[in-house]
Length: 378
Image (cartoon, rainbow, N blue to C red; front, side, top):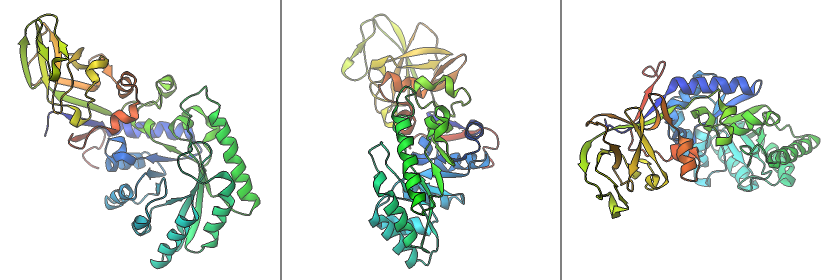
């Protein structure tokens, strides 16, 4: 196994899910495991989340849902957007919950269910209340809800939901406006005799910071992995802890002279003689090439060590100064070592992005190693 790896603490995943269930109660909790469980490993995260009491799972792609089914997971799995028509068959065959927001997709889903002799294929109607990405217009929700009912017994309207655009900004008024629009849609559906089923609005930020968005269910993603949706929410997220660490080991040590250039382009020259440690991890693994340019550090010997020069595809270099260092010494890029810690959100802030992108960007060539209670038993 490579020295560079992602260590995932399944006990932290379970504890985070339990904390979020307590926060959201009495709402049911759906755990989002799209993008390979935000880089943590979809199947293992899903198993841990369900063992902690999650009601079901959410994915972005049919293929992600099929992977979970093939791993033996039987819990409800919601696919969060309409899928290509040529994948509707797989969606129905594997008992995934569909999301719909167009007549064409509803009809294709019903036709596929009829062809496969499936009765009651569950559909959730997604309404766009302000994200302006995907979803039905609020004024078309009654028509689409009625369309699902009209295709009975092939289809069953299991829920109606929307997605919050600004829930991680506690100062924004957008969330309250989205909730108002959503409630108006639900009122319209009920007046038209359409039972909307399960209502769900809240993402992680909504679940934690906006109690009025919790409704019948919540869909929690980033918080499950112990990462606050925004750095401004760190205090509000004190009940969760990071589940993933990115670690490696020193592969080479050398002394360089004052004025020597480091890495491609010699964009960095050391000001004095120093010890440089090479670490076998790079941008092909998800460590951004420009991390050094924004003050990026790693932890070696319980101290922050500055990355020197641009991160290369497979390796990066670290300034050890006059401190001793040996091949095989542990290197922590994300996680804790001694009393020090580096978080995904810290990388995100330095790189003008978010912690989500950091963990989702950890590449498949990094082994995932699972630790925590019953890690080997799952």
